[in-house]
Amino acid sequence: MKFSKIVFLGISLGVGLSALAQDDGLKIYISADMEGVVGAVTGEQLSPGGFEYERFRQFMTDEVNAAIDAARAAGATEFLVSDSHGNGQNLLIEQMPDDVMIVRSWPRPLGMMEGIDDTFDGVIFTGYHASTANTRGVRAHTMSSANITSLRLNGIEMTEGSINAAIAGYFGVPVILVTGDDAAVAENQVIIGDIEGAIVKWSYGFHSARTLTPEAAYEEIRTRTASAISRIDDFDPYVLETPIELELSLKHYMPVETLSYLPNVEKVNSHTIRYIGEDIIDISKFLRVATGYRVDLQP
Image (tube, rainbow, N blue to C red; front, side, top):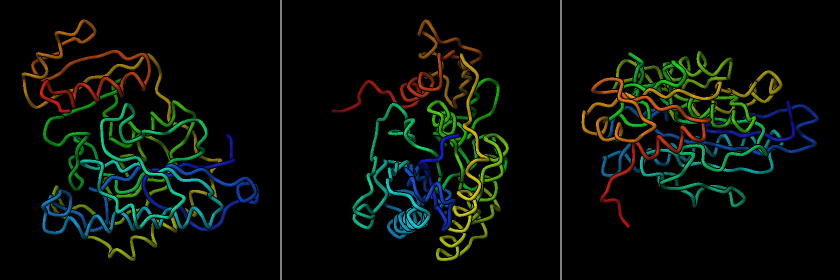
């Protein structure tokens, strides 16, 4: 596995790395979500208009900056951060280092992974959550808590993390760390593999948790990042066998019926469609259309 750089999708990198990585420098990709951020439990923290949203934008930004600081201490020299929650405009970009590039807003063909390519060496997910099929987990959902009830690729029930890991894997880049609640970390480790996990809260239910304080969460992220970097050679890209079968179950009847009019989409039942994609990039683009297209989209 190449060792020149590393991509971090979500949370933090720690201090210390092998001499080789120190010499070569690291390229880091960070995909940052918000439901898994320390202390976040309801829409009051997660959506504009919520009475705590502005404070939790700060916590989200601070988690990403903790990852950046630790990655830089470990030898990282290049960063790309994907703002991957809600409207894609959550991170306080004026508080981020001047040499960091940021992906914002939608639509994006690769969704939460836009900008990933084969020049990166590792990925970190920050603020991630469990899947819609998980019976535990704070704000557990997959892509849309309002509309999607199941999303399977090649028969595997997917998390947002495993979908994004497959996109990174297409380019030969491994995920090395995920941060979030205990359910999210455990579920992603089962699907993706033995990646590092930084648990910042423990789920009691969809809208409740026992949580660390922000400063304690940042320290945990730094520590787990350091551990991940120290064993970077242990991580393999998560690659799905092609072609890829997508089974997507939706809450409502009408989008299932309408999507089934497409010649390459099969209606499995009143709530589920099947689509065969050439690869995960094809699947990603299909999902953007299936979950985001409206005839009244503007401009």
